[in-house]
Length: 203
Length: 131
Image 1 (cartoon, chains in turn yellow, orange):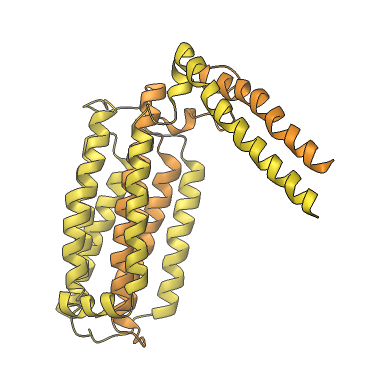
Image 2: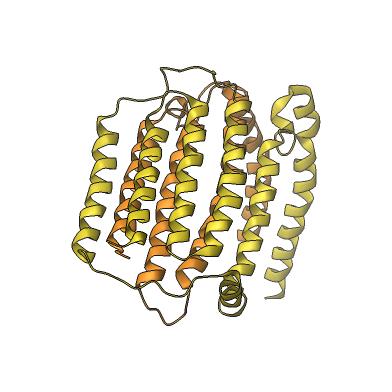
């Protein structure tokens, strides 16, 4: 075992242990903080695996942004500070499926790779990865930017109750706003019907 | 470097994430477990990038970056959904969310009222066209 193996084992143990605490702890806020430990250990694993840029992006986006968003969600849903007993459902099916998935995949991968040894390639620095992203993977990159825009618009629409939900909220407002789409929709449908009749007449 | 170590780590993390998604009642904790599963997939991608000599160099790491961006988008929309659920029901327990459309309540009365006004308007020109 080399030094990289020892580091991989230690960081992997930290990641799996913190992940187990994330899914078993009774404190909501502590689950978020254990998630920080787990994601940080994963960033360390990426560093040992020579994925330099991925490790820093992991620290920036996951540990920086995603966990902060999750803690915001914990705060905004008024989670209790101490331990809460109603966080879990009865766990036999979950343990069966989760344990079966994890141990089955682990057995499959152990059987596939045994104890083989691989030399680490050259590190994935920002220069090499940027070259790949902007040369080979330009189209997925641009599509991903469109997806981020769609997610942004979707989050805004979901979190604003006055978009699309105004006719359903107040009855008086709903009745006042209700005939609007109908009055606007009927001439459109009628025009479409006229066009269809014209098309039928031309034939 | 023995590639079996990060692979087994990723498999165990994925199992833990699946367990958490099925076990937890709180929607925020379900989102955290989904993050665990996404990170397990990322670890598999990065490890495969170091072990497999592919035609395109560093394709696995580029895919891991893409998955990180997807997870950021997913957590934004998921947070919006969780907050909307909390605003509607004052609770984020995922097993109390009705999967069928509730029979009573203001959101269902409105769609029940609007189709009778719109359906004749749509069916009448269709009937004229068929004549």
